[in-house]
Figure 1 (cartoon, helix red, strand yellow):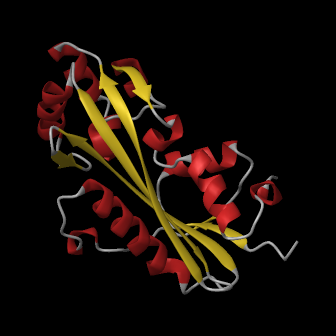
Figure 2: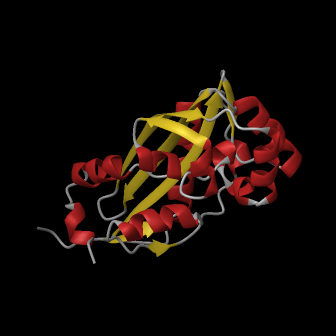
Length: 198
C-alpha cells in the first residue's frame, strides 16, 4: 500500500471534527476563507457541491501529499434553501416554519488528493422530520444559542436532537459529514480508511 497522505479538514466546524475523531481519524484542521457568496444557484445539490469544492480547493495548495476534505450543508424546505440563520429572530421564524414538517438536509463533500492530484465531489441527502414543537420550546432553543451556528437551524448532536422526530438516510450527514460516503470516497482515491485509525 502506498504511503498514506495526511488528512486535512478544510472546515472550522467542531461537529465535523468530532465526527472524524470519533471514527479514529485525527485530521489537520485548516479552515478555508472561501467566500461563499460567490456561489449563486438555487439547486441545493449543486450549491453544496460547489461550496464544498471551493472550500477544499482554497486550502489544498498548502498541503502537498494530503487528502483535503471540504464540506458544506444546507437545508431545503418546500423548495427554499436555508443556511445558517442570520439572527435569533430569523431562527425563531425558521423553526415556526419547520415544525411538524419534513426538510431535506444536503451535505456536499469534496475530497482532493493533492499527491496525484485528483478531486472527487459528492453529495448526500437526508430527510429530517421536525417535531411539532411549541413556541416556548422554539424560543428556549434559540435562546440557547445552539441553532445560530448550524445549517438548518439545529444541531442533531445537541439540544436540537430533542426536536427531531426521525431521520431517513445517513445520520452523520445531518451533522455535516456522511461517514459512509467519506469511506467510499477515500477508497475511490485508492486508500484504505482504516489506515487513518489512531
